Image (cartoon, rainbow, N blue to C red):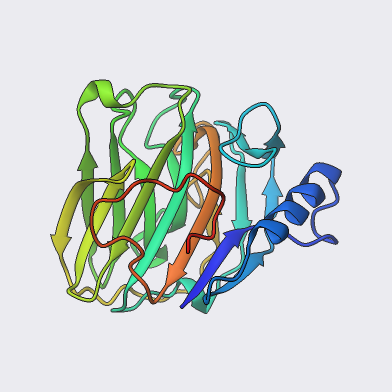
Length: 239
């Protein structure tokens, strides 16, 4: 299997904090039999590393809800097709801002012809719901919801989506299965950027995350959990 950690390259990211975060990511990515590789990213607007809030290490990615995001070039390593996969990250909401859903990660443009897959929060004021979007010729969704009191602002939560060998797609909230469906969908493959913190093509203040994301990991070929689990208590990778 191949696993990718959010990262960057020295010539693309000149900010010293980002270079330091890359050194940490590489140092933390011990090989447990999988192939781990940091991926280069491009920061847009005020997307930045924040050392005041993080799950592990010294920083996390901060987005202020006004057109900030990280953009990564398309890669075959998140072309899931009909196979197994896992998408996961830690997220901390600061607030709802603007309109539309706060987007976390994915390849989801504004029109049908630009949509592949993505993970987003529910519409404003419904912080306890997360949605996995996937397109196999028609757009489908899987919604995971927890009790209203289970999610509060300014707290870190682990969100994950995976599909196993039995074609069960699950969405998890802190390791608890919050929604599932059996679907053998052949998730389409388009040459689209992968965005973190905003839906591709969103206008400022809409479909943007106002908060922090840490430890993004995309794994092709493996359902890492395939059932309820205890969220990682150390930086990725997970043995």
